[in-house]
Image 1 (cartoon, protein in one colour):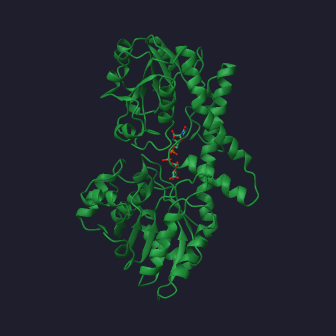
Image 2: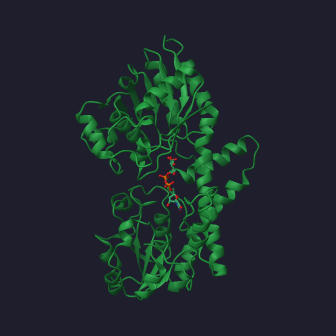
Image 3: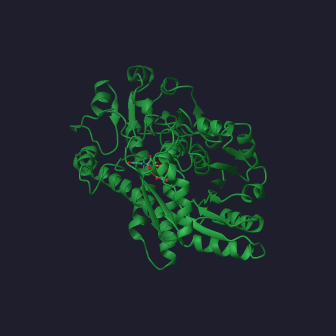
Length: 458
Ligand code: UGA
């Protein structure tokens, strides 16, 4: 199928590259000139495992092209995936102006009928507005448009894998023709009929994804409901962690046992500095606003959000208790990205923590395997070091703010020997407390008070 993907951020680049990988002819477009230039030069504006390889190979093999003009991207294709950003407005609503612009463009430039798929995360009823805009602005063309919703469930850091091996593909449609077209687009993935660059031996789960067909409104709601529920789970684990600290229990023992119940599940019960990134914080806010607008006070989500916002305060308090005074202390910060395996620092708890420590006069020396470049621009007050050992050298405290797996494998004796004071504050429960204390660190983590019996696997 001839597909175009509008918007070349995380979602657009992964969608475009993966749809090309499974055999479609894909054209990508982004209105941001700088981003578009980078892509034409074969450079990606973001880091995502496996994406560069996929993008470059499909470009080379001719299945993936880049449109210079927006009109060129929409004219002669069968389906258009809208993957533009929907950032939060001041009041928490999602900013839908980019979607509106694309809708008007599609309506005025299309010369043939097509399927228009909203993939960006949008509030319920965006599909209706999209349909209306296409009809109004496209009234003088002979083209007819079918609108569908197809939310993405891609996690940064494993987005390519998530796209090629999803557990579900949700499509919100109004007619059988749109469903048929989307089924055709996803057929290679539904049948595992492609050579997976991430798992050349075959899909790791071994089971075909569910193809879930719903109304457009339900499909739109599924995305917000899923992200908000996961955020809720994290906040619940964080509340439990606070309770564990007061009661002398270990949050990991508690959540591990809870997670063995299939009704609860083991995922997203990791306590720490809270959730960040460009999805959960903005999606939970947008969902609360959406409920407000239809007269429902979604207090459950408001509390989950408030609890998350307090995570940094309580961790700064922990650091203050340990250091007594933060002012003029050298603090080593390991991790800047909002989570491992990405260079994304948007709404990163690690960055928020660094800002707070700098504001209190702390001398922050930071290191992250991938996010240094972006952090330098966003947080010029910190010193950026070449590796974790240089970061820790002479430090009064070391804070783990992102759980990069390589941090667990550091030579911690070397780290300890370089520090002024071997104080380790693990904001992501990455290390085994027993191991850290046995090495002579004063060690604090989240919800795992000293004297607990847990033996972590890190
Ligand atoms: C999230 C969802 O997981 C995806 O399914 C969804 O498609 C995506 O948002 C989106 O809306 O586009 P992502 O933001 O990449 O993906 O990251 P997650 O892995 O979900 O983590 C979000 C935040 O929660 C991170 O800051 C992470 O550190 C934190 N987290 C996660 C915890 O604090 N504890 C956990 O147990 C899990």
